[in-house]
Length: 237
Figure 1: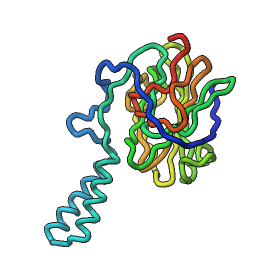
Figure 2: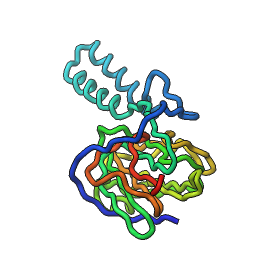
Figure 3: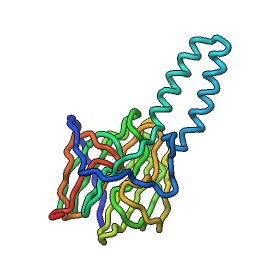
Figure 4: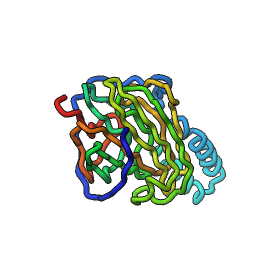
């Protein structure tokens, strides 16, 4: 069984993704033409209505503030379709953001991804397989880039048995601003690589636990994309 460990660092470059093939179909969570996470509508619609009312009454200062807030919300809750790489032994990135940890020990490899408030916050399954365990931990809301955030903050840990028989794990961790972790899946569900599995509202991170036998394709400072970037590849595949 993989086990969690945590450590961090910072710099910046971009990770390329494997050959793309088709837009990944998302069972149970189609976005259609409006590519927004459904959790955003309770924030976006009231803000839009208030903006319209404020503008109609010529309250320009509140209108400007509401317009900026609406722009932030639309950007935060966007959820574009992604071209998911296909192939054996690919560990697909589950979150948009910057890699703040990428290392390994005798039991496997660890990649931690920090999402700032401008990243897409919908998370995706890193491989195809069945979810065998989920555990929610209530906790604090310290800055998600801190070393101890992975042990102290609100978080939701997934374990999966992949279609090739391996065991992987990944953890959604709430951050300083994030106050709610939303799951789209349950124990026993079979998910496809790149499928939406949940989101974290307003700034957070995802920690990945990759079994031994995988080669890392990401380094600290890389900017990666959920459902698109390959962050590890099974040796020999």
